[in-house]
Length: 281
Image (cartoon, rainbow, N blue to C red; front, side, top):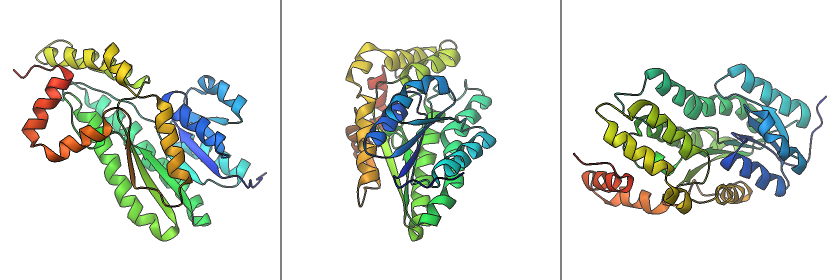
């Protein structure tokens, strides 16, 4: 039986850790009825103590997403905010990364977000209001060594967000892009593991090991921003009367995006090789 709540309802994907977890807590504190979604529901048990409702959702499984959205509508009667946060980084030389892995990264980072948006939009249009928040990355504006597939997904989600913003404006719906920089989370460790798995030997070994070491280094983690910073930015965006279209936030995001805009391509290439420790020859 549907019980229409007066509190705004938010769905946050990838909520078992990092930015998603912090965002679920932040929006709950702001008075939202929050549905935290992830594949590993057991890792979200502590969120229930904060009044957050947890649901199992795999953004590569259409039935899973449909069931999740239907559950929210059945219980709360509405969805006001969708935060597409689920995603991961898979690094490796283009020549080395299996196409199956490339496709999977697109399934998670792009098609999952797009399909969930399709499922949620009819409910936002009924209310003629709502916000869709897509978590891209400063990696949606810049490029780094051995990050071809990851950056491709984030560039794609940036483009989808811009087109979608035009499409849904007549229905009172806004689309907001969050572009995090370096964040303390599981992301860097996963990305480092991926690049080591495919490019730690062979012709790209020097680059692969340098990128993996850079991603997992103590100095990188020390400089990285806490996920709570991104969560507070998301809260600011979804509660604003008129939000910005984009928020670049977190370690390195604004300066790196700026440098990519003003530097010649080959100069930026040199900078990225130096930052990641990748040899030029």
